[in-house]
Structure formats: C-alpha cells, structure tokens
Length: 277
Image 1 (tube, helix red, strand yellow):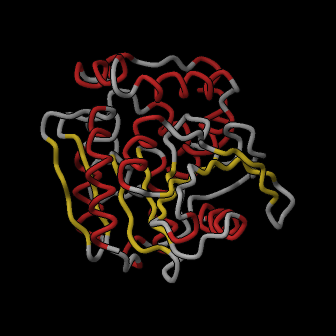
Image 2 (cartoon, one colour):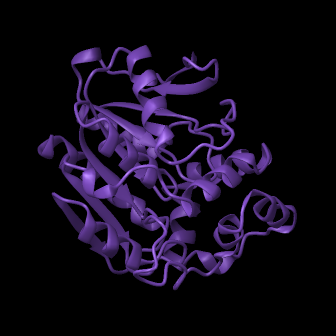
C-alpha cells in the first residue's frame, strides 16, 4: 500500500512524498524516483509493480509547484539534492539509489553528484543534458519552444505558457502505444499535473536552461543512461553528451523507442541499480 505524507522542510516548504513500503522496511533496497515534467510525483503503477516483484522500497515526491508541493522560486536543478536529503531523513532512509525520467533525470543526477555518501547509483531515462554549445542542444526536438523561451528568462517562459499546446508529433507511434497500454497511468498523471497549472513546468524549464548548480563530472556513483533512438522530445545527442562527461557511466540505447516507450526498460534498470550498488 502506497502511503502519501506531507513533509515540512527546514525552510518551511511542504512537499508531498510517496512511499511504497515493503515487508522488510528500512532494510530494503531503496530507490527514489524523480518524476518527469509535468507530473504530480505520485508513484506510477508500472514502477510500483516492478519494485514490488523485486522487494524494492520505492519513494518519490512532487518537486516544488507540482502535486501539492510548495513552490521554490528561483530553484535550480541542484536544489533537488537538499530536498531529497531531508525527505530521506524524514522517511528514515540513509542510503538509496535514484532514478529519473525525462525532466526527472537532471534532478536524479543532482542527487548523485551532491549526495555522494548517500546515493549508491543513478539511472537517467530519456533525460536532458545541461545546456551547452558543444552540440546543437535543440536539434531533434520537435517542440523546443518552452526551453527556448526559458533561456530568455521567466517572463518569456510565462508568456509562452499562456498559448502553449502539446505537439502530438513529439511522440512516436511506440510512445502512443505505451500511453494507451502499460504507461496509461503516466498520461493520466501528466494530465492531472497540467490541470494544476504551468508553474512546475515553467520552473523546471527555467532550471534546465540555466546553469544546473553542479558539474556532472563530479558524479562518482555508477550511472546508467537509457535512451530511445527515436526520441523526439529529448534526442539521443543528450544521452551521448552525458555518457561522455559522466565518469563510471554506461549507455543503453534502445533504437526503436521514443520518449515514453523507453520507460519499459525501467524494471531491468532497477536490477542494474541493485547490482551496481
């Protein structure tokens, strides 16, 4: 049974956290999931099922301005590490692995870089790379308008949000099949998050387009990057850059997958985390 609890952080903000729990409790191998953009932070059924069959304790939380968590104006990607450390403390967890998909990927990497004594390994599925001019960061994105606006600042990103509509071509046929099947809970959760307003997504995009607040080369923990070869949201060039710049990393390229269907690799990635930790 998944439990949801409100955790108050040291700066007074409230975050909504989720805990799958397992029979052996604090002794279980623990993975903290970082949700995509936009989502509420609630644990999704395919992830819960994979964790359940493996005896893994699965945690998650809503980033600031998502799913009932308080906003954190001006947050950068690195701020996730301090939030996660406090959430783990509140839930009685010392060491844990992290996984993140899409917009959750950078925040998982932040935890690996900035909490080296606590994070045992990191998996990043379809995650974006820090902004860089060493490759064309926007190339291959069907709809980069939100990130381009974020690079121009908050006011530009807020103006963009007022007229933004989702481009269905961002997803491949495999993505749409995943959303109609195994990952239907992801689509439903994204709709719930979108219905709460754009603040969380705006904050994420602003954080992605600005300096992250840490260097990925500082990540010493084992790191796995899982990338769909046909991803039209975050193209493979991002995973290529991350693998080249993160020590102790490896790439699983799934040539036929897009941005959503690549999540089918999450259960096996959990096995990789356990073996690597």
